[in-house]
Amino acid sequence: MTKKSQASVNMFALHREVTGSLHFISVKSPTNKRIKFIVDCGMFQEEKYQDLNQDFPFKVEELDFALVTHGHIDHIGRLPVAVKQGFTKTIYTTYDTKVIMGIALEDSYKILKKDSDALMYTMQDVKNTISQVKAVEFNKTISVAENVKVTFFVNGHIPGAALILVQISEIGYEDINLLFTGDYNNTNLFFEVPELPEWVTELPLTVITEATYGDSLSTDVEYSFIETVYEATRKSKDIVIPCISLDRMQKELYKIKYMQDKNLIPNSYRIGIDGKLAQTYTNLYTNRELYIEDDIADFLPRGLEFIDKSTRQAYMLDPTPKITLTSSGMGSFGPARVHILDVLENKAGLVLFTSYLAEGTLGRKLQETVDDDTVHIGEKTIIKRGTVKFTSEDSSHAKADEMIEFLKKFKNLNSVLINHGEIATKYAFREMILKNVKVKNVEIMDNDRFFRISTVHPIKVITSKFL
Ligand SMILES: [Zn+2]
Image 1 (cartoon, protein in one colour):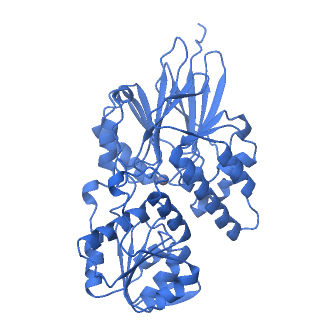
Image 2 (cartoon, helix red, strand yellow; image 1 turned 180 degrees about the vertical axis):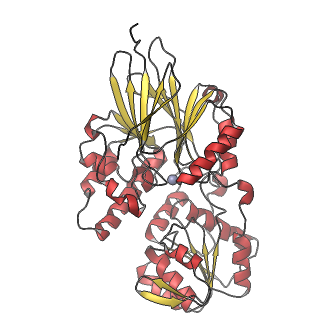
Image 3 (cartoon, rainbow, N blue to C red; image 1 turned 90 degrees about the vertical axis):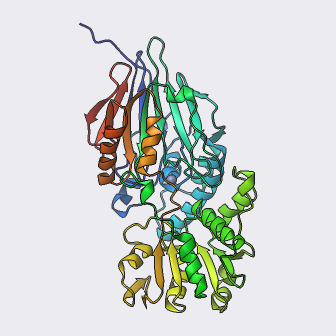
């Protein structure tokens, strides 16, 4: 019996956990023609994976194209490395992601330059990367290679973020359909996230999904931001709110404005935003360079001051009580460090963290330090005298129950591959999918295995050590 040739897709993920998102996909046609592409090309940010940032376990010059789900550095940070090493083809993404990529990659380059003397790529590589980007509209199916079509759908994670549908068709065979969620959120404060059209939810489909919050429920989220800020202002405390520059910062600015409108913040308070990148992104929102709905475009608090190096000292010394929104979100970098130090040591004020705090960051250290104990901030040692609080209510990832609702919408789900999240979380989420969603296979993607999806067998898991 001769073995019948078939269309198939080989796919592997380069990342094990949360950062460094990269999928390599190789399509084999029945006539043995190959098409190779990547979905995202992120920088590893966990210290233990830093060494992996230099190399790719495939030939970048053989790639036919790249797709980008959204503009976060852990999904785009290594594109300039691929370009430097010989990737010259088109990078497809949405208009807003293209705008964000230009800013995010330039910023990332500057940070790398500050931290290391052996750079992985140059500013010219960043420029070349952006010149290779072709922006495409949402909901419009385009052909990107022979027999390969892609469609981008709105995703609430951040502006520009997309769910990407890849359809691979070979004459005489059923299509192979892959849907990449990237980082996913079912809503966004600043724009509507419509349901996927029926023609998509009815496709026989393999969904490659994230699971960042695969072990937490939306009902567990505590909404404490407004109350925490309100109580601190009753005591005329200085408040520092560290925020991620894109999306989170603008959400928290909106909340402060909402509180002003409801008279929940005394008029005497100065409101400042400090952090260059955060200010750049905020301007993209207010100038409508990113797609923002009309009814929320006016979200800046009254009297908002843009603080920078030249005004920071005078701003901090002014005895008027202040609410300062500042980057970075975990407190370790940027002006956040300076403001946190000032408010905790000199003013016994409030620091309200709004994002997930990774191990080793200043935010996490403060979380683990009891009041009146010492904390090291850079070379300084201070006594924790103020109040430190935390909220995750404005996270830009869907929770496990919301992800399950999303998966339930597909009528013809062949497989779900879980690609993004801490290892234990991915396993917990797998159990939850198996219990609640009608699907034939649920697999965990990591860098030890690759997956073969074919027109004959929906999925085959092949063990292989890539790294
Ligand atoms: Zn993201």
